[in-house]
Image (cartoon, rainbow, N blue to C red; front, side, top):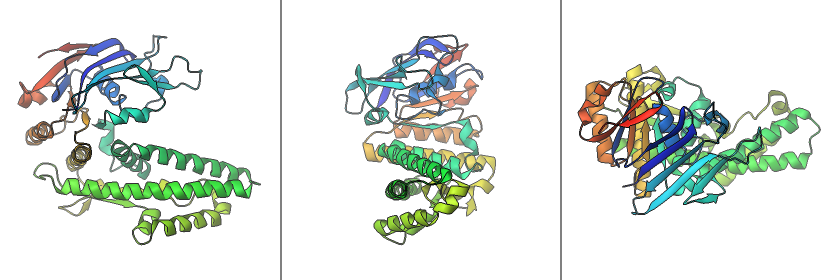
Length: 377
């Protein structure tokens, strides 16, 4: 089973130094009052996978306020192949002020890209801030979808970055006026190529996610229907990719004058949205009750974990922050059972230890208090 066996934090958020050793490969529970530092531990774990972690924080936001020593996280990871890998990340001490960089090491050797972490460790998380996903803006759902794809396909992040950079450069040139036509055309070509690849990846992933959802038991976490809503995605459903690419490039060329005034681009994958529907009621998720939205979201995250397990041969590490707080006893028990059957290392936090009585003797418990971590099992 893939799992972290040890994790150490240095000058990370509220922790000057902390470590968790001999970690279980199954359920891990962190209990303590709000502000004790539970979520900081989950964030540290998430940063051993590619990306900016479960908070999406900038590098310097993670630094312990009263310390000048750069923050770092180190972990010993045991893969499902049986080998052990030392993973590390932290603030690059050679970073210039205002251009802070994050360094990544694997088995003590520096690597050029965070993407290398994805070859070993994949994380899926659910936080209280995500509870408003279905009520939030399309931009937030789009970011959420792309992050899910990123955990499944590390190359997706690069495509999104290239597209957004080209979009930003084009917008700046059009806004300033008198831009070189060949330069703008080159940026539009890049937007067309990467934009179609992004849309195609989203459609493919959502199709796979839907299949994973439909294969699950829906007694406690209802079946959801997913659809990517966007002009490019709709065109791809009815025409070859090369044809859609040419149509998008033509549209960008024709809309230069308008885009120079309004900024951005009128259409493209940066305008797409993820539509989620409660299948049994045929009701959009944003119209569902708070409890139904939570259950739909948990079901989505679990389906994503199963999808990664099917593709990679091992489940991701699950980071579930305060996930049990608003579930009734039946759904809590069902969630714990699903996590155990998934054979994933699952980290759960909660302010009340009685939320986890159903898994006493089946999980590893830690008490977090005043930035101190104590093993209670």
